[in-house]
Length: 242
Ligand SMILES: [Zn+2]
Image (cartoon, rainbow, N blue to C red; front, side, top):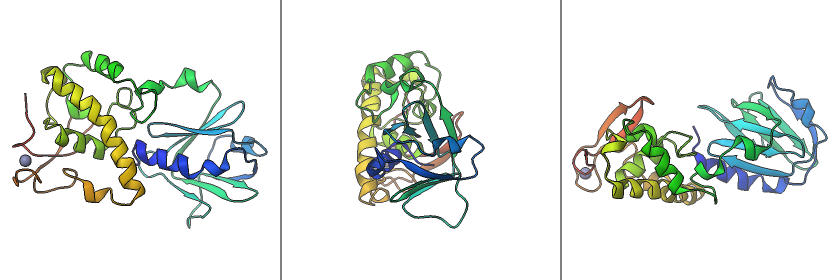
């Protein structure tokens, strides 16, 4: 599943299509995608893992879910959910959810919760965390209403870098460490973006999929944790359980 930074990369990749008119639409989406024919793309936006194609009166939301993918100016060997064809070039989206949004995006999305957005507001994140003292930090980091765009890799790396054990309840983590966690969620996301662009993301993983702790050489623990039940990789020696 792509994390927020991967969608930011997609957004940069499709920039040349801004201002371009769609001449043909294809795909097996059940939404009224033919409505897009003849429309001109005015912008691309993202909110975490949502990719948004903006038109004058409506927006197409693409959510890649678990197995979604895309190809720009090339095709995969299977039917697309949505294919947009332009005078020059095309965009293809596969195995994703496609939805047409009629409302103003500012009414639908809280841009301040997106860790990669210029409007990201760490204080608002802190305030939201205050309301969930019993939630495990591994679940809180994946909460898309608090840390929009953070996925499982980012979760594991942020907890390792801040030396916070994934099974800590939010209410037990010292304020200073919580501030560090919030700061690192954004910081690591930008590292992720740069490394992914250079195809060196995996090389920089300190915790995710690792078996030996790079700091103390102890074996790493791998466990499915929390309500989200996602894979956690952590070092019991370095990461503190408060
Ligand atoms: Zn360690």
